[in-house]
Image 1: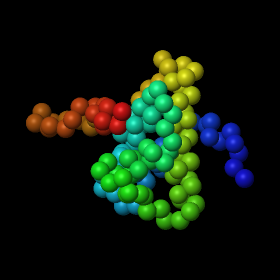
Image 2: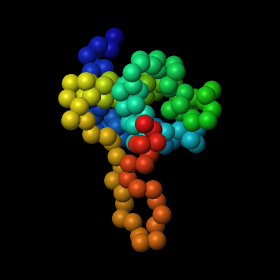
Image 3: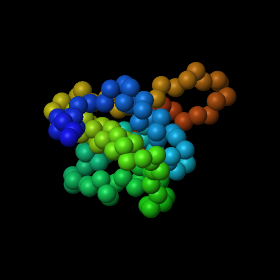
Image 4: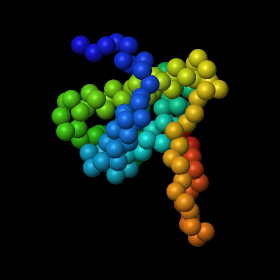
Length: 131
């Protein structure tokens, strides 16, 4: 049986990398959120006025336009692991915003060196879209 305190533990860098890798894999629809967008989305969920059940918000993680889309997990263990990572990340954001909101730092991708003619969106765009 899993330790009930495990849900309270923030994700490690390794776990964030694991979640990011899964979100970018072929196991999810092509329009699945990336980690930065997921972070903004989860921040919006926990900072909103009403509690929202995972069954309501989770389909949007996998696909923006297809509410019936879902991840194609390799097996039950992978499904449980990824869902636990997503839920732990949600709880971590909720805890930080509830206990010490000034310590909250969104997960933002650092921009790679841009060329002068590069037209990539500015840093934080995906986070804001998620929120």
